[in-house]
Picture 1 (cartoon, one colour):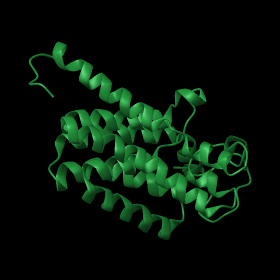
Picture 2 (cartoon, one colour):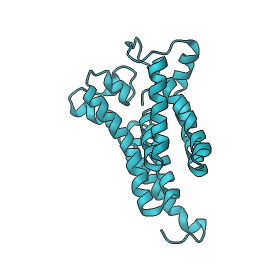
Picture 3 (spheres, helix red, strand yellow):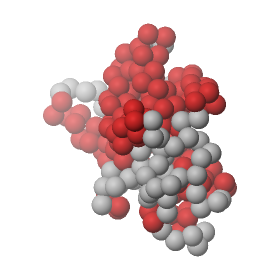
Picture 4 (cartoon, one colour):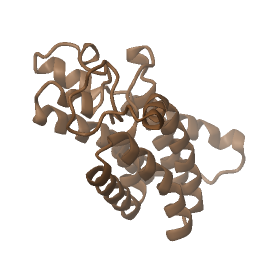
Length: 215
């Protein structure tokens, strides 16, 4: 990127990075893959979410794994491509775009997933050690309490703190603090059920159309 002389000069690059990330992030892998497999509209199954957890309700672990991988990698690719060409500032902007695209895809009337897999994918693209810690926190809490949503919420809350205090990455910590706020907002129903003791555990059969932290 040319030397930034003024905000007037550089803002188109940030807008382009945001748009690039958004377009990648808005690819609804859960919906696309289940339709290609002849399973219909995933939004009419279980929680109605387009993420991995709901895709798993189709009975296909392979489709669920492919959805998880796709939703994560679209975040990783967005930040990696832009980082390689233009540096970390624009890469973080692309990551924000990818996250917004997953949460609010224009193709689905802005009704997307809850962002866990994409959050992890973005983190993997900009700071893989923090991504490993995110995954370890998620797995540890999921094994201990068997709440997918609680695991995701806690891991996302820890991420900005780890980036800032453990890795001295203030800029990344600020961006992931914003992503964490958005992720928590998308999980507001899960938080309410957790507080009420009504959240479904991992492995339990869902009795309603709403469900735990679908990535």
